[in-house]
Length: 109
Image 1 (tube, rainbow, N blue to C red):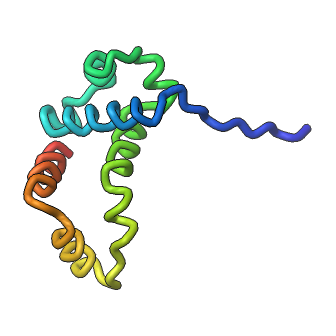
Image 2: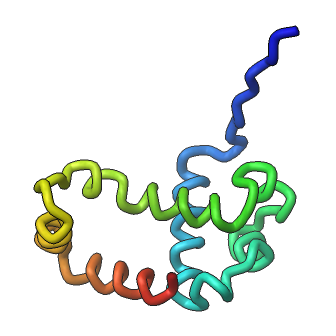
């Protein structure tokens, strides 16, 4: 019997996903990774916890997707051939507010 491949379909609009990812990143900056809970994300985004788990599986997957969404354009463009060069190129792309937000996120993680 052949296995049937199922794909996860989002019930969120693109705008709603962006809002949810931004909220996750805000919470990371405020309370850190250990303090981030699916309950807090659900409350702040007015989404049921069951929906979050159904869509992303758990906190790790949700945080990873939020980080991917935030950095998708810049990270894909950078490939200098060395890790140090990549970091320098990423820093050159950032403006002051973006750098402040990124440092807040890094402290949260």
